[in-house]
Image 1 (cartoon, rainbow, N blue to C red):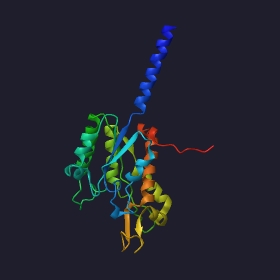
Image 2: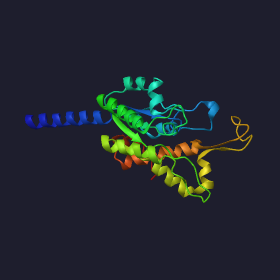
Image 3: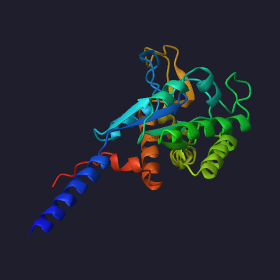
Length: 252
């Protein structure tokens, strides 16, 4: 009887320890560009997908959005935005990495070469792993660019493929936001897809009295759609954090 009780106690303690590890609080660090970042009120309705993303998790998950407008992998590092993230990360946390929009345009001061882009992504991965943090690579969200025939153009082909290559080489989870968001835009077509981006008529919004047509940045609806693509990709790729996504309550 004494042996049975001892075994039962050990099993209970083991289960409690397992549950404690399973439910331990974690922080998800987001690093990237304006398509992910938190927006100032003066830029609304422009919305980064990282803003609604944080609301889809249970109370054990904290999302810290460090993405900044106009940043590339290089300017994120050179602008001293990476070091605070690298210093704060701890065992069990996640690092979500989404760059490309500003790296790939050669006329921008933020431009990086293909080799430099991959080196910078690998640096983020290496430094995360040194702290027992799980790195996750994300291809850049698609731009809304349809040609005269109504065909969506692939504006991230080169740099998205570089992200995929780094993910494969480094054996890192890859969330293909570019590919999946392109699928969504093709499904919606040239007109309906405008509903996801900042398309405003003059006087439609006080922040843009002259109106605005922006096929890169999302409005609230578009940001939520992108966040949901990321969440679906997390489940498909079996990212451990997916277990903490809040499940809708079904009324009986």
